[in-house]
Image 1 (spheres, rainbow, N blue to C red):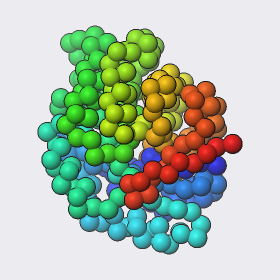
Image 2: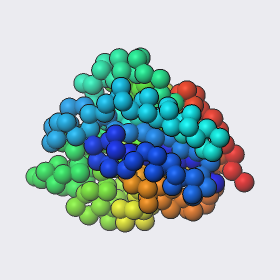
Image 3: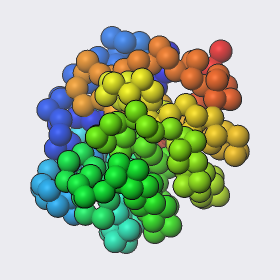
Image 4: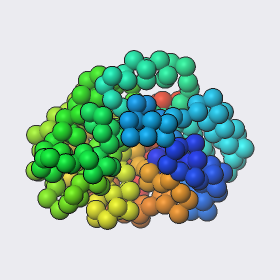
Length: 267
C-alpha cells in the first residue's frame, strides 16, 4: 500500500489517540510504514500550553515502539513544527539536540493568530486573509529551512468563511509559485495531505493543481500524510493517491529515515 507520514497521537495537545492503537490500526490497514509527527507549536497565543510537546517523553516512546514492532511495520519518529519567523533559532537549537527521521514545517499561526479561529478573518476579505497566510509561508521559509517538507500549504482554506468555494491555484498563482520555487531552490518537499477530503474540500491540501505545478517546476520530494488525530482517520482516502500522483506527474513518493529521503516507485 503506502506509508502514512503525518500522524498525531496523545503526545499532541489536540489528540487523545494512544500511539500503539494508531500503530495497530496502520497494521490492520496494511500500510507499508508510518511516521508519527506530533505537534510542537511554540508561542501559540490562543492556548499557550496546548502544543508544547514533551520531547523527553515523546522521542524515547516512539523509538521504543519502532523496536517493538520492527518485525511487523516500520514506525519512524517525526515532528510537525509550527513555524513562525521569530522561532527560527529556537527550532534550530531543538533539531540540533534531537534525532528525528522526519520534520514537517507547517504554518498554523499567522502573525500571532491561527486561521482556525474566526478572529483571523475579521475586518477583511477572505482573499486578503488567504494572501496573508501564503505570504507568511514565504516569511517562514526565508527565516528557517531546516524542515524536510512543508505541510498542508493551503491549510487556511479548511477554515475560511467559504473554505475553497472561491479558492484555486490560479486565483493565487503568483504567491503560490513563489512558495514552490523557494522550496525547490532549498531542496524541500511538499506533502499530499488527505485531510482536505475529511474537511469536505473535495481535494487534498494542497490541491492537485499545486502538486502538479510543483512537479512542473522541478519538485521531486513528495510525502503522503493523512494528518490523522485518531485511528479511524489513518490513511484517509488513500485510495485516491495513485490517481493523484499519476495526474500530477509523479511515479513515486517519498519517505524519510534519519532525515534522508527514500523514493518509492509506484506501479
